[in-house]
Amino acid sequence: MARALKSRLPDAVYPVPEPDLTPEEMIARARAFRSRLRAEQDEAEDRGGYSEGMHREFLKAGIYRILQPRMFGGYEFDITTFYRTMLEISIGHPGAGWCATLCASHPWVVGSHWKEEGQRALFGPDGNFSAPHRAPPTGTATPVEGGYRIAGQWDYCSGIPHATHFLGVARDGASDDKNATLTFAIPKSQVTVLDDWGGDKTLGMRASGSNSVKIENAVIPRSYTTYGYGLWRAEATTAMGTPGTRLHRNPMYLGRTSGPYHMSLVTPILGAARASIEEFETIIARRETRHQPGLLRFKHADFQRTWGTARALADAAEGILLAAGDKYMWQCRRWAETGQAISLEDDLRLWGMVQHAGRLAGEAVETVFANASSAATKKGEKIERYYRDVAMYKSHISSQYLNFAAPIARAHFGLPVGMFGM
Image (cartoon, rainbow, N blue to C red; front, top):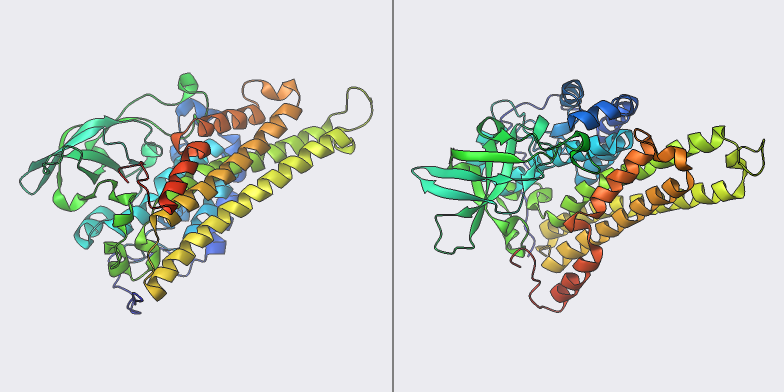
């Protein structure tokens, strides 16, 4: 049965800054930041994230509002527009792109899974909201009158330097099930951001703002919480939809996070691939071959082969990434029109699809790195930086496509998936 969504748009609580802004204009704004992001790469790596000045430019451009509901001052553009925009930022600096993407993607999660009371509070008082999200339940949520007392520490909170809030998962002390969890939102003013990112603290993604956060007995209202691992599980999208589909009347807010979550990780890697190819082109246009003095490298078949291979890999990765965004939007529309839910298998297959976009983009960077000469391996060289950023992505648990292949099959055959309690 189709889940008809009311055609009347909900009343706006906070005005949209530029109500007539188009997706194309948003993408063009992000593209315009490219040269500045590249000029500030060294400083951003040392700092651990992009500058406060860059953050203010992102705020002015509306970068953090792309997926936010219009009801609460956002543009409510689709998933594909969001990742096309983040790709332009990531081409300027993959680490900064990781920071911005993981900070700006979660208004969509709140807009999907929090009830109206919580959304009104979190997006208030002016519609300015951004937050990283950490799924491991490395904290506790103890019931108190009207809410919860949160305590714990969460690592890899990418985007926290410029966030307004933090989204985390904690053990739910209100449940008799020791494995029960809840997802919570908390203002950044109630957390401590630890100085454990930037500089030489990590191999790559040094500008991703992936600091740890610590919370010590902070009290939040119950409206700031929602279900725990349900963000990942099939039960999160019931036959009746989510709080977001009912409130915003937009099927995008089914909020199935698996595929779009991994798109957030792969987009900066595709940015690294695109940026590496541009840097490689600059190198081969200026330098001569060693064995044929006087012949610029771009005229030699060996370097043509490298450029063409990397270009094809990056193009394939981009095609998969954008097709995944379109596929998610189609699945949401299908639910609205026919009532067919996005199944667990659908969710995992989209995730797996995006993993292979990341694999291809990483191969593009590695191809360029191996053929850019040893000069490109020096500290501070852009290709060296992009290579390190790819290495960080490849170590991420979510990028392990071989480990995720069997769960996709288990979902298809109706067996326990064995991931995130599924």
